[in-house]
Amino acid sequence: MPVKHAVLGMLMERPSYGYAIANRLSERLGPELAISESTVHTSLRSMKARGEVEVVGRRFRGEQTATVFAPTQKGVDLYERWLGKPLARTRMRDDLYLKFALVDPDRLPKFREEFQRLELECVEEIAAHTVGVPLTHDLSDPVSWRAARRLLLDSRALDHLNGDLAFIRRTLGVLRWADAQGGTVPRDRLLEAVS
Amino acid sequence: MSALLSLIGVTKRYTRGVREVTVLDDVSLELEPGDFACVIGGRGEGKTTLLEIAAAYTRPDKGTVWFADQDITNPSDALRTQLHRSDIGCVMNRSVPLVFDTVLRHVALPLLSAGRGVKESQRAAAGMIERVGARDYIDARVSDLADWERARVALAQACVRNPRLLIADELTDTLDLIERSTVLGLLQSFANESVTVLITAADSHGAIGCSRLLALSGGRLVEPRVSERERPSPADDPGDVVPFRTRDRRLGG
Figure (tube, chains in turn yellow, red):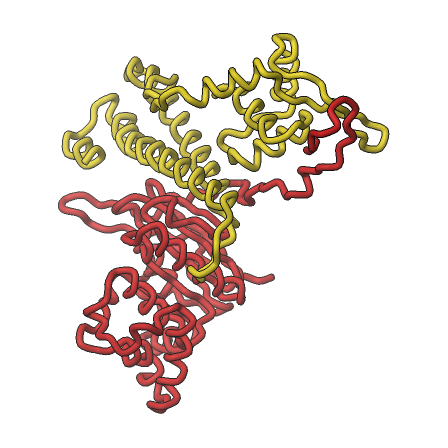
C-alpha cells in the first residue's frame, strides 16, 4: 500500500502530526491495513526531504512537542495525480500462491501446519472486523458518511477474508488426506473440496 | 458469571455413503448470559449439528451438554419439551413456517401450544412482531412473505416466550446487506438484554456484531484469542494545535 499517499490524504484534510495521523489512519482503514506511527514518521521525514510536506506548527502536550505538517503544492499535485489514476485489482501473485505452486509432497506436513496457522490468523482478522460492531435494527436511523465508509471497507475486507478462509479450508481438507496417504489424494475428496 | 450453556468434549460422527465422518471432534464451548456467539463454517462442517446438540435435539456420541446446571446430553422427550417451552428459542433450517397461517397466528403458536389463552397469546405475539419490525405484515400469510420478512417472523416466534437461549441456524445467509444488518442488530439487542444468542453463518458477513466469533473446521472449533475490535475514539484525534506560521489554517490532529 502506498503509505505516503495515505499520509498525504490525511494532511489534505487538515494539517496534523505523526501520532494523530496514525490514529486517524487506523480508524479509517481498519485493522487489516493500519499503518504504524513509526511508519508514518518515516514517511513524513522522507516527504519533507523531497519538499512534498512542510512544517507548519507545533502542538504542545505536557512536556512533549509534536511537529505539525501540511502538504506543499508539490505534495498536493502528487496526491491529486495518484488519486486520479485508474483503479486496479491486486493480482494473486503473493508469497502463498508462489510457494503453493512449487511445494513437493515431502513438505506437506510442514505446509499443513502452516495452513492451520493461517486459518487461525484469518479467523482472528475476521473477528477484528466483526466482533463488537454496534448495530441497529431501526432502518430510519441515518448513517454518517464516516460510519458508511467504515461499513463499506469492512465488507470489502470480509469479502477478501472469506475468499482466503475458503481456500485455506479447502486446502487443509485435501492436505489432511495427502498427509495420511503419503502424498496422494482420493479423487472424490479432491472434487468434493474444490466443488 | 456461570455458563448458561456448556458443551464439554462433544464428538459426533455420521456415515456418508461408505465413509464415517467426524463432524464434531472433541468440541468444547461455554456461553454465558448475554454472549452473542456466531459459528462460521462451510457446507457440511457441522454447524447445524452443533446447534442441534446445543438445543437438545440431537445426542452427541461422546461428551456432555449442560444447560443452566442441568445435564441435557440425553434428554427425555419431556425435558426437551420443557426446555423448548420455556428456556430455548430456535430458528432451525428445518423449521419451515406454516404455509397458510397468518404472521400473528404463527408467532402466537408457541404460546397457544403451551396452554396460554388466545387473547393473551396474540397480545404477546403482536408485541414481539412490533419489536422485530414486522407489524406491517402482521395479517399476511407467512407463505406470501419474502425471505427477509420470514426471517423476522421466525425470530419473533423463537423469542415470543422470552427464552434464555436463542439459537438460529443460518438465519441471515440468504439476506442482503441491509436486511442482514437489521436482523443481526435485532439479535444483538436480545443479547444486550442478557439473552444468550448462538447462531451460525456460512461466512463472516453473518457474524458482524457478535461478541464471540468461532469457526468450525475439520470438526474442530477455532476461537481467536483477540476478539475485541479496537476502534480509536474521536478523543484520540485532538484539534487543539498551536500554529506558528500560518494563521488562517485550522490546525488539527
